Length: 353
Image (cartoon, rainbow, N blue to C red; front, side):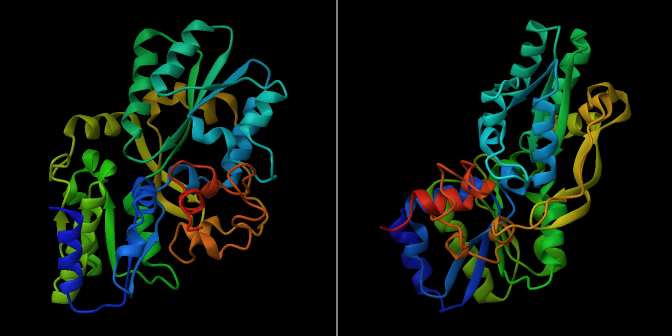
């Protein structure tokens, strides 16, 4: 179905004043790139959620990663988005630590980091395992492969997070004002669409597992508005070409083998029970926190950056006093302006002139 046809269907629905949250950072970028917000009827607002893994990583974890990068004999291996995420001090990021002599390597997958460790047995290679259920199986596979291949100088600083506990915490938070969810398609490939049944089942909030083309997103918005107009919240799998009801059983089993859920800290949401992933005891040799004695602080003092409010739907990027002035992609203050999935980066790149 073409976008124009879907918009006709949307406009034919009764007028509504609703806020719909796209959980996934890839959706945020796709919405901004296609200018979809401007096409929707007045009163229908799309807001960003805690679905950018770089953005939800709190500054105290980045401070610990920065300290690692300066240790003798340690190489930090990371995805590119993480290189410019500041810690608690502005301008202090992995890229700057590398420029000052720290050992930091860009990798495209956790297995690249394992290969890096094999090439440099004299160094401890620590992979920054950031991400949600989407990337967690690959991180698990790297530790399992390192164990199988006898690679002793590889470990993971796991910053992995789980989507469901974060959404539950968000829904239960003060001032929550969202009437429907665009659920993350990439995560649902692993978890299955039924993983999000709790949204309508327990909270009475309509949910649609959405794909990433403009037509996917518009159709998903239509389904949410239709359910709200009918007063019958449910779960729709719009991305059925990639997402099954039960998800990827092999990936789920790998996660069960490699990890255990733990209490974890989120930017904008604080600490959430069973929302992070730590290595199971049988893989503890690859847990960088235990292996290297990484100390994680209690959190940085607050700044004027409003990234936490942006990724919980409480403020648009333009509402932050630093947006586009003090905070730009060239000189970011917070991770929402750094990440390729960040709400502030999307708003800045595709802003109306």
